[in-house]
Image (spheres, one colour):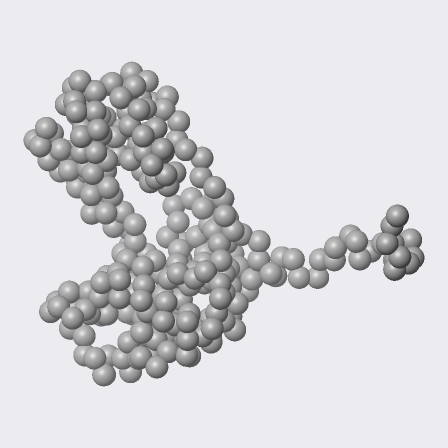
Length: 287
């Protein structure tokens, strides 16, 4: 079994899958084998269904369940075993939620309230280019192109793209570099030659939100949502935003940016277009 999983892992590496995807897919297969207590050549599609139902009963998020199903399908495809009925297992429907977005004023308040130069430079860089957490965490000094005002990003699936570097972020990064002198990674951790950990980034945003007095449920990804929404409100083409965010499909960008303030500003509710006369006759309660 270990040999099959190692072969699977190597194949995923050859396909150019990210380390995160490889880890998630191999973990899904290991969990399946442990749950069924069967080897790869004894498992059938009913076993997979029972495993996924068990996951659902343990309140595992639908996105995680779908990711495990994708890993299992990929595994059996690679070991060239056609599991009858595996393709018919449906993915779980994901709830579409409108993302939380900060106003420009809130972003300004959030960033300017930070006294720690490293934290302020890091969060400003994330908002400047609409970066994901890992994209910001794994930035190298050489990824900052000050001449072209661009940031070279290593995105999902090891796909590179360029995004925006603002003048404000560049000024902060230059001051930060003078003070901290990072050597390889732009935002270095305490360990030598290691990037800042995820937890440190998450703590940054928690402290910043608390200090700014913002009561919205905010994470680092909120800065990415806000980046995309503010660009759309400024009239930037959706296709351009798609490239900057690193989305494979334009449909992802469409749902990601949602309805912006610019699209609804000036739109009047039909209730306000009706004569008030018949509706506001008396203050007496109906009997």
